[in-house]
Image (cartoon, rainbow, N blue to C red):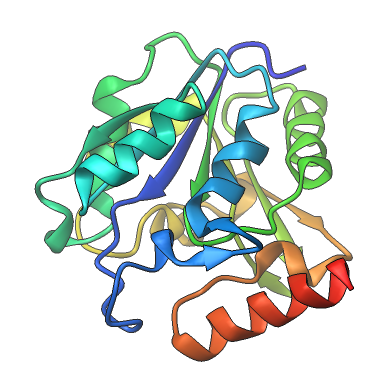
Length: 204
């Protein structure tokens, strides 16, 4: 089902709001980033990679342990767009679409990923952008058809692909998703504690 699709895990952020490297914080007994890596790895992508920051050696090791190649973004301080453009330079050139994941969204589910992929192939066009929604708000991961690859490759700043979606609403397909936990992230210490509590309660 994921034939000719690529995946990019964005894991090069500076975690300025957290004040420390959040992707290595423990969550349910393992580093936060590994939750995303493990879920993404379950899908047989045509190509899959992670864009990482510091500490590069530790983040690269987590990716390598899961068979996901990584590339270091030395320009990460200039914004998220640098990670997108770097990934596109390293990804296979014959992909029908690329799904972008956030490294600090640990509860993203396989069911959500498969639903977005199914919607993409149902649309039957590389011009579509598939984005999950919860109560009218858009979240990640987002699947961009290959038509948008040239525009993604020249993005700048910290807005990522959102500006492309805003400028081309006719090509955006929203997928309403009933599970808000899929979109929880860890931008702050408080959000990280909420994630830990949620997983602790599930184990209990």
